[in-house]
Image (tube, rainbow, N blue to C red; front, side, top):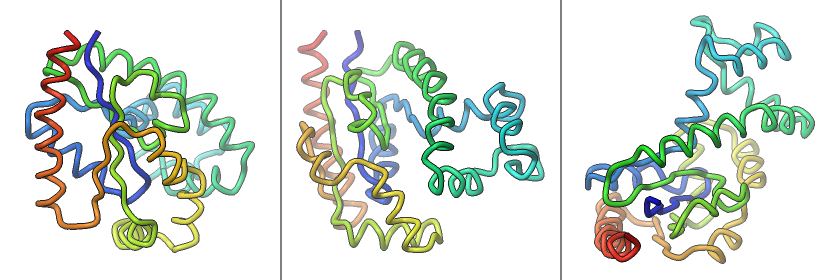
Length: 201
């Protein structure tokens, strides 16, 4: 079995930047957000089911899913959120396992914003949390996604709390400085994970 390092953090924490650095170091990253987009690509059964439930308004002009519209629907309705999760989570789980097993780097990175609250942590030997103060998290997300503050706060409220993530972490990078600092911290952990993966094998 591969040595799997879980990488998580709240919205706007810098997961993607950390993941990119691990990939630059030659590590395969399996990203739950990427997989969640792949399972609803045009022509997929999942997208057809979503369109059947919500109508054409859920699609962009090119036939792909309008994720912004879908996000608004599920964050305003717990029933819709539960329905969507029931549809997508099994598909995402199967594809995640397939990609983890196919990875051929010294260890594999599993990137997911919901590692702590979804039970996906069982797939990982280590859990790395990218941590950031909540005010900075909100500020970065508003700037990046151009979302209103109340929507960012609702998304944060739907994720594990900062305290819950930190309580389950094996390793933590506090990403409250610049990109160079984040990459230096990733480089240090990379050496540690190489060693742990060798011992694991």
